Image (spheres, rainbow, N blue to C red):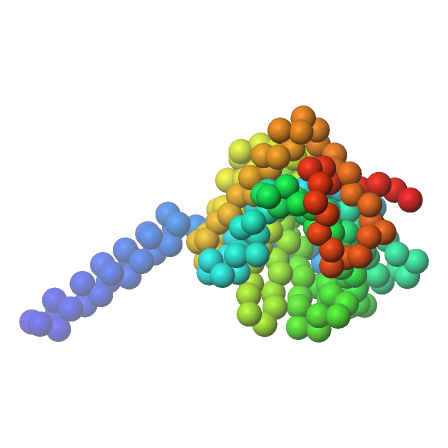
Length: 210
């Protein structure tokens, strides 16, 4: 009799599990193959909008940031892309940064010059003017939302949060992007020839083409 009672309960638990899975069906981000991308589509200026991770420590590096603009350019070598950043801190200071991405034949990911353990993956976003970037290194994994526009629609950010949840990344950080409002402009002055380790004490950060 006890055995007969256990079987229906097992069936009910199984059906309940199927129902929960159906109701909480996740739409995972679609991975883009880095070596097959139309590069012209992804070169140029990108704004940093949000970040997500499974642990707060993976996002700690961004907590002092007010806004960031990136510029992706093609180097002389076809397998090398340069990413430059003008980072404006909440204190108003500007920090320049630069990375070289390496595109390898038959690899769907991008390597980073000088950081052998880091892997960068690209994923599609719900909004056509946005892209999701996943960074994985020895001590962290996180996804980042970049957009062509400084203030993307709320549904774009909501879609990013949903995809982060599907990846078990419950920690979410929205980049404030408030200082540009105070300045009344969406461009930041920034001279790229200064040392990449320095900090500029200025209220404005902007790319200036040489």
